[in-house]
Length: 459
Image 1 (cartoon, one colour):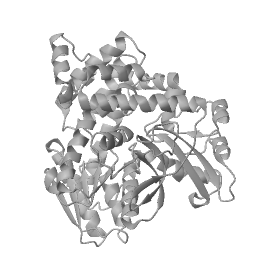
Image 2: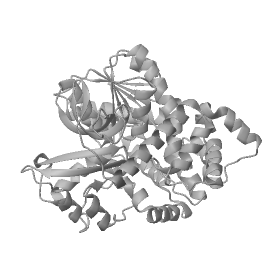
Image 3: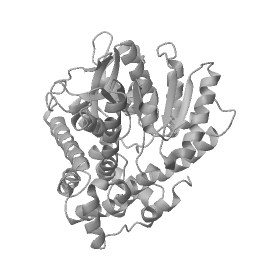
């Protein structure tokens, strides 16, 4: 087992997931890989992983390394959970759009676009190494933006043995059944869309659809699984009554854009963006992880927005290895499951996970409103991925103009230019354009974003 981004605060959940499935996975070695800037965290979380394995009475070898190629050689499964630019890059993704009066968010709007720009070249480099060193391995990706990264792996990396994961469907299925007095085993879920932009419907074991029952409970205060990083403003009841589907939490950025923007700008003005809050949480977690007596996942990890990603990765691995035919919601090739989108592109859909990978379940056509949304968002993702691969500035500008959270016009271009300058270190594909912008005097105006790189390693 190889995990790239092994110094992540989520790694204890990954190790816990492996331990829970020790009877399903004959693990011999776990390799945790990171980069030099992450070496301190890798050592902290790696030593905790070793304590967890020892406490479970297992003889697995846990290796810590900065040499990715050493770890990948002859690997069976590779999981990816890295963040190019560390949390400092996320601060820029949130602060710079905020300085323009726009939403700053990790996987949506300008921030989400730049996270993809930074990440796609790195994942394709990893795939290149895998083709040489472990050509039979499965790649389990939960690096965000997960759908776009999985798309790039398949379309540009030409790597078919990949599954992309998201914790949002997991949290929905964990929390929704109890709201209507059911257990998950008594319900059938069908999800369809793309990563962070999907809808779902639910049926009980008598064949009755209970989607509207769950929707009704969403308005009486019941906990339905909203991720920690999303501000809770209710969807318009009339809209959900019409669509008769449950949108994922991230739809709030589009269905309640004004309210979500106002909340984002309030955090920006108070110097309390989500990235800055996550830095605080991470500091607390790594302080805990250094305790030589801690040999289990701490409850504080649930405060991170991506809780349950890692456990989902373990289940996907176990289902592939054991041909378990588990129902999971994953990013995979469409293959006709969503007829409103091309069959040869990546969607996020309910699937059966087998030894041959994900077998997507057919969802059918969307109604016109949802069809319009999903076709716009998917085509925007394709433009983003192509820009990330080619470094084509015109395509990057197209992505900004297409994005519903970025009003088109001169300010959109100015924002794009400023974010290119801010991310110079991680965007070699845009090097020529960045040099041109520097010569024109383009600089980063938000002082927090402009100075954040000076504090790398202090959090």
